[in-house]
Image (tube, rainbow, N blue to C red; front, side):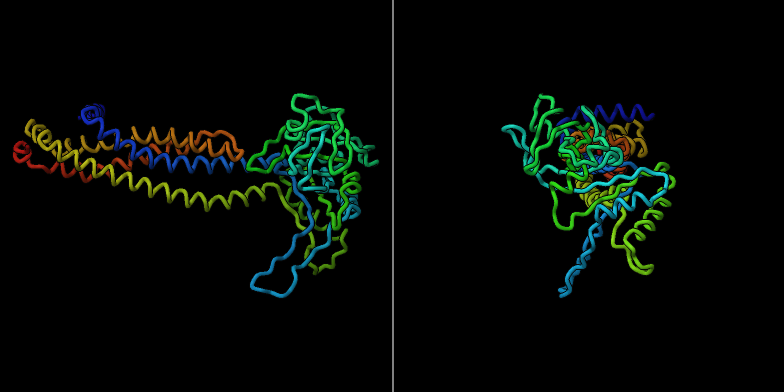
Length: 410
């Protein structure tokens, strides 16, 4: 018999036992849905992380103040504190760094500020950054309305600001924000630009931001140990490693570190941060895959039991087929094809549900919609394997039935 004939016989058998076939397909759907859904959500999260950091570009790195060494095991020694990067040190670096690149100075003025406009105010979760004229370029922002800072505004610490789309939506609704005055940390700023949306992928809130001129940030939001951030955008991404080495050497000279002294600053590459977050998701991927396969194993066992019941119920039918000349190979193929067809029906349903559920989870955490072709193909292939594994023993059992005894079966 041809493959098409076997598939037709399988569909005929399924139509004759609709309830059993539906239950079996649903069991398979649940297993595939769990596997595809979880892995789709994880892929969406990975894409969200990459999108979040890709705005900075693969050719960008930051020089930041080194954090503290956390000591465990009850050590009585206090954590080592590192010197903040002063504005003067940052400016000296820019003056001495001759590598082909664009350098920008910035400072995180506040992680959680409230922005006010007339009688409206934002939640106390707005990030305030101080930046120079190059900050938008190296940070991956574009101006949607209005303009960027001028050199004069940065140098004179003018009370002007650029705002993100979340701040605009919260305070201005449908009103044009450019030219209006807002209050940030008690200081009054005139809005000169609205930034294009970067999205809030994975909760990083790139649109919940206010950017003010660098010198203004130092004066208005002054705090002890306020540390500058140097961002360098290399012209040729292939020279990134050379640029990092040159930057390390220059900044060590700026900070007058002895030859054998360790760096009291850190250099972060945007793609390294994304890779670190994605590597953490790999553990979740492994756990999710194990859970999905356990669910699918349960579905396979359920399918095998239902197929064994089917063999018992159709013993007389098998005897008639054998009496009409069907060989063991033909009977075995018929039951294997039936198991595979049921698996594919359930698998397709599970794949569709898995894609929907996975993308809903992804969208909830700020990712984008994806179609996981790898998991779709994998799910279909897996259904074939599950059908073969689950249907093999029942098919062999059916093919070995004695035709005389099978015809006597009531």
